Length: 325
Length: 273
Image (cartoon, rainbow over all chains, first blue to last red; front, side):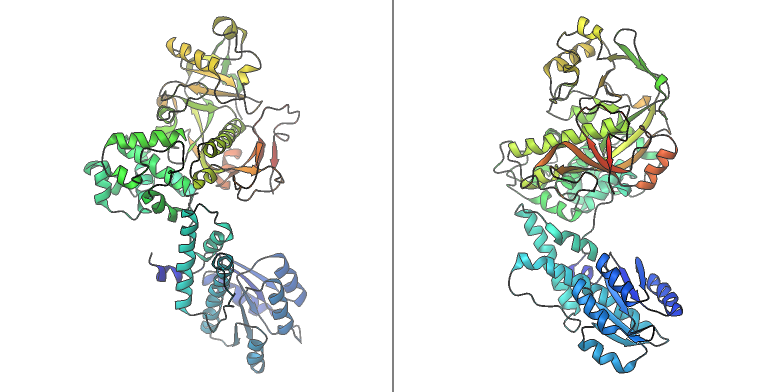
């Protein structure tokens, strides 16, 4: 997926805190929020409940009613959130039109009047979700990039800023992998944001072997011509045609070259620590084992170039090394 | 529930499995299908010897207890992490040795005869006197006398060996020498993905571990962590009495050394929150 289109996708984690004392509003918001993609909605009806929840759990957006049980509590809530979850974006939604400007002055990222039409509210919640995740990604990036920390406000949060952040974060993860450094908190922040996908073993084991090869091959961003060069035309076409879930074909014989390539691709997935996005790096990298006392047969040329010879013995030798280490 | 009457030991050192005996095997996710399960090709594609196979010699290793399989694989992950460090393999490969996604295969076999039960006086008398009560569970992954008798068993046409695990003190391991794919009873095979992790030496064993950095931290030398990823599938397998030992929690920390257990599997697993 292109960087900019990936950047604007909905976050993978959407945990919403709603502070609202009116039962009818809570029911309406719950239905509304789940219908637009929220994964979890938790309610607080008092200031104390809000404080307890924000101190106990991490949310991705907070929707705040300004008046709770007859008291104006909005500023207290904003202060508490700034204190306990400083990256959490907030949307104030209130019938008190006269506090809208003040709410923004006190730290609300969005402040909106309660109206029957909820489109504006939903739009603000979705943008706030993305803002929270972007702030967290930025925080995880900052120690690696250095320089002064620049707070990301709602006003500065444009699609261009988001796309740039997505690109920088993903590039940095790849660079750290290439440098042999651990990924730290950044990867989990990217996963939460939806900018980094995780391998799903339950889905994978349900595929037949040809489909497994096809599935893993798709992460290398290679074409059918390359696959044909490695496996030969018939076997490559068999792999390219295998997209269905496992059924009666699970025990069907497959060419040895396909089975060996499955082991090779699984090895790539494993050393990528099950981050599918890192597989192309290990597929193409040259000289990775330069300091090793036990080098694989593809060392010096990179795995891709070694496999492109199209010789079954290259696959066999590679798998033998992988299974021996 | 596992039916002990289906696992035959004796007379002498002979052993066998009766029709319907349940076996467990931890495989890679890639080769968890029934067509790959008992081919023995994994070992035949490795230059490393196993406990009962020479380099590039066919062998399928199974267990009669899920904890046996988990403990065996966790131990080998630990050794792999150390070996990769010793061989100066890239950091990513060393780090990746600390965690693994695996598939637990649960399946029943039709009768398999011509097996050897290793821990007997007959093996000591007839094959090799160095295979004693202690050395039958020799802690190193490779023990020369075991590989020597492996060759003799194969030459004599035996189909495999049942033997006590060096990593877990209940039930047994089984190695099969031939492609026994046709012995898997159709429809009996289920696959449950499981995540395995090495843990830090100072890990709270009642909590799920985070990422272990094999460079900066000391890996625990006798314990590891497992978690069945698809918990509904695991729960169903438990309901169907396909999991032995009964009461095995879906995630926990386990020993990969032999111990005495009074309350089993309670003392063998620290269930993680």
